[in-house]
Image 1 (cartoon, rainbow, N blue to C red):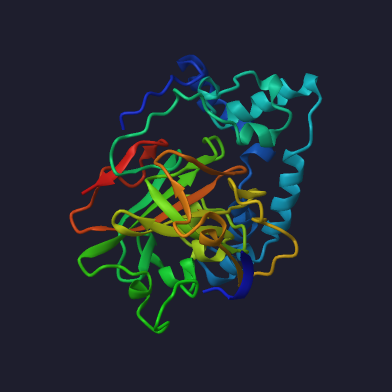
Image 2: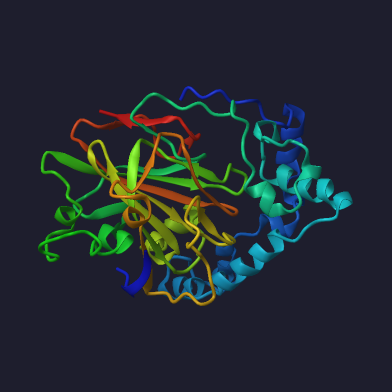
Length: 357
């Protein structure tokens, strides 16, 4: 049953790029010829302020940006993405997007652009079964993207970027769906973190040209889904450096449950032009809806829908999808000797090992 409630608190086989080396050099030289609507980012709304002498890190410029109508713009973009294109226009238009964002169509299950009826279908394209392999390690990447940050949490604080952090309690919300004898416990105790373990986090940014479906990163059971309506600010590294608590402001879907070491959560964070976040099998989830009110959250119990164990997933199982680009945040309990195998800023692909004890 779902309800709304009150205030929120390696080793992967990859095909070569579809562009040859000569074309890549041409692309770098004439990159500015990309159509403006493909090169636009929401954080570029601040350019007029910068010309007026207001640096992006100032309070005024942040206030202007965070009050921009990104939710409305994203809904309009979502509608545009679903407009069926006439067959004669599909290849010319979609080829521009593929070229602009270096999409590797050789990995796509359907390579023929004429078979995609609109931009939305291209964004959400499935991959060939052989395009990704799943590492035997305990924990793998749930998606393609760039690693923004990985490591241990500092108490109940998570590093957004170096020098900026946000509250885990605000990000996940109160744990009032659990059977807690004392809701006033410290937040880590509310999550049930064992004193012999530690809490870790991993943040992956999906660029517009990336594969936009996400998968189960491990064998786990999802017990609770919580949807936070919110802003749809850009989650690009440019913005993450100067908007405090960015991931707590944006619309997001938190999936919480258990894996072999204890608490485990995966959060899909929305961003500008993300018309929807979809979780497979959750027909009640509706994101970026005009009727949603920021400051409230909507809960759904997967234990009531799927039984006492909740929704049980194997590593690599399809889990959901985005429109356009966004961010996945993993927050999980693990043993003290857990080590990440990846570095901040590096590229990663779905199924690659993230780490292990």
